[in-house]
Image (cartoon, rainbow, N blue to C red):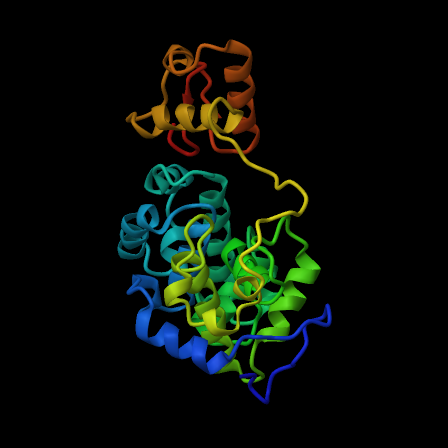
Length: 306
């Protein structure tokens, strides 16, 4: 059934099949017990978790998040740490620029927002490294605001349940936000709970390869199921590879520096990758990004650690 306080059509003119109360009840009863969902976790804990979770599985984030929140429970605590400390603590989560941007955001939050993460989307968007997804996720999950939260999992749920497609294809930010906005109830609390429920459903039930349609709360009114679960026939999706890329080489170089007590000679970095041109390119990009610094005697180290 369709709730009376929500639209009955998507921006594309299609029927909305999602009952907010049914989805919220499912989430309340089955949601994973993740630490950043705890009642005592504030906006800072949610901002750290959402930054870490970008393109990184939950099981890899859990121990690092707990360590960070124990070590830096407030933005000002992280802001007071050196960049090198922050990169070491980030460990092997990948995309280490996220750590640096979070460090910058912590400084702004501490100095300009009274050490409290803002609650509105526009102010969050003004923070270093905070984009559309993260701003809306913090507003919704930390402060219970009505803010459409769109990630890969949510897009897949909407593609299947609403549009009858196996997958959402390549992102279309304006359309994706409009689609999710059309599904949310009008009031903040229920909208924020539904946002969390949509994401949980995509992560745990409506998965890419083995969707659990038999336990899905939307199965009775899912356009994709009604259509017989047709295969994806949209444009080819962009696939990010990792092996052999500059990103892999950057990670290997940073592993050397995180595992050292201080700056290391160039030879230690040269040993991790045979392709000298690619290795040099990766190291240069780390220097440009401020993730690595070179000492006066020609060694290399994490920022602020020489």
